Length: 410
Image (cartoon, rainbow, N blue to C red):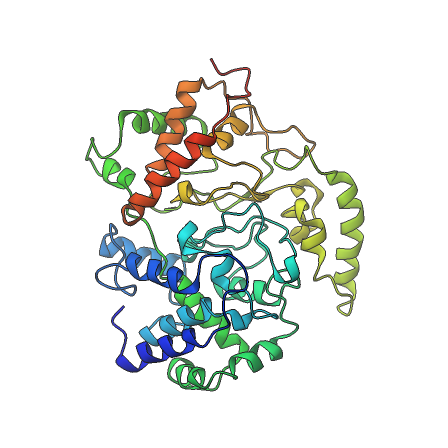
């Protein structure tokens, strides 16, 4: 990013003033080095690598990449980047947004569930922020409709970053003299909570990674992916595209809808969770003074049903985007599947049957070789800027693969 000199200086100054690392995680300095290495040669604001200008114009329009009041510019993006790595946004000053959306791990978390303040576990696995600007809803249950709303959520979540109020967040940011100038340049006023969320969203919208070997293959370069990946793509088209469409209008290999695919039912009593949660949610709808802020933490396995209050959506979660999926293990909303082989085996067996399961989830009957081929295709969806990380992820996951559990595998 071609920042102005004063913005670069403020970024360095503010980051160096942060508290020391509290626990063993990727350091802020290392995460920022990784981010700088990933920056496209034409900068974060330019058309992303591998995307045609007219295609990018379509995406910007269709996915609201330049919303009114938060059209991206170098100052807003730089401010959002700084806030993204700033631990002051957590109650005990130990966590930043990047802690659970680590550039080293595909802007996700290598843990099954992220660790919030005071050692609390998040309700669900942290989804990647790569290509977040190309989604239409956010969080696993889709409760946020804008990236700005998503960016604000974890900061105030009591089990994640744990800030007690919007005013407390603003007070924390105003402790830093450098931020006053940044917010003045970016939004024309002193720091406000809405602008903190806007800046974070402006930065996250730059994290576009759509330049994969598979895209070259689809454009006509037949040797861009391996024969196994090509065979895996044909199997994927046959079995998976009802929820993971393959087309340029939906570039993330996700329909953006919500499906119960049979995850979490072996370890949770969803019927009992629903009996407890729904009365509380409906009481909150009737009386705004009733606090339902911890419902997701306690009843998160109910998925989309927590948002719609519709029983048929119990256990339904947003279809995960598959771009760069190789880098974001472990998988599914609860982080219960360790490798992509485990994911394909889960679908091959038809999921864990339950009363609300999507009828499209059926036993597939793939052989061991075919499972390997589908996985090879999924590894071909990683952006070329992340080729080295993709290779490391393949080797690491392959070592953890156990013999298939499915009776259909031969």
